[in-house]
Image (spheres, rainbow, N blue to C red):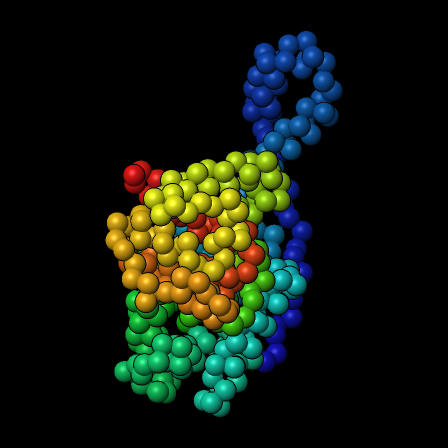
Length: 362
């Protein structure tokens, strides 16, 4: 499907110069603050400093310097519209993420004779989403197979998204899509939805880490279009990533805290942990820990106490995630398959979630 040509941004408008009265007040204020040093500044330097300060304050919501589609400029007063920065669409990681998701959808739907080429164009009406969810969930949705009108498409999409949201069991704040955004072909909303589906159903794919999109938010104020940019994270980078990259000493402090927490409970079974990333990899300690934290005995026939192969380890980790959900926690984001390898940060995220929920349990 052909993509529209990228539009080059127009030159930004210069800030409106301050009136002589306002500049005089600022000069007086600088004089009071800086004393003799401020008074010795040349008029040109003061003017440049003032302009720099104005630009810094107004940058988050400055007159738009993006060339917008005509329909994107047809806004009512105070109306807000969001769009993807054209330059962001060429990001290598974003392109990689979209290709991985397209290949995954086509693999799932290979028996349906459906070929997805463009996520926004092919998923917006709910038809492909319906088929994808039916295959993943193993159930048939009671919706019309083909819909032509916008009203019928949105009704179908509403039913499909409601069923998907019920299955994902996400809190409202974590649902980053809705009928209007998907039907409007918002690539941000569609990517959030597909990433959530792939993680929930443990798709056999590897999503690129730390993918983000620059989103331009346009608003009309007093008849003037103004814009600001926000960074929308699609695959997350959290505090553990930051600690791992920039503060390994603090990361070690977190590890020691978590080791103390898990041993406080595992010691009741005469078990002890010294290495978080390796000793939790087969899921055994995660299952036992959940039983101790929730105060019940986990029957040995529900998991493999001495797993002998990869599949048994995956079963243990998946079972521990189910116990966490039964305890009222959100299902951990790492896939069980990924947790069975030496995956330090994934382990820390899971254990830290347990620590914050059960740290007061004796």
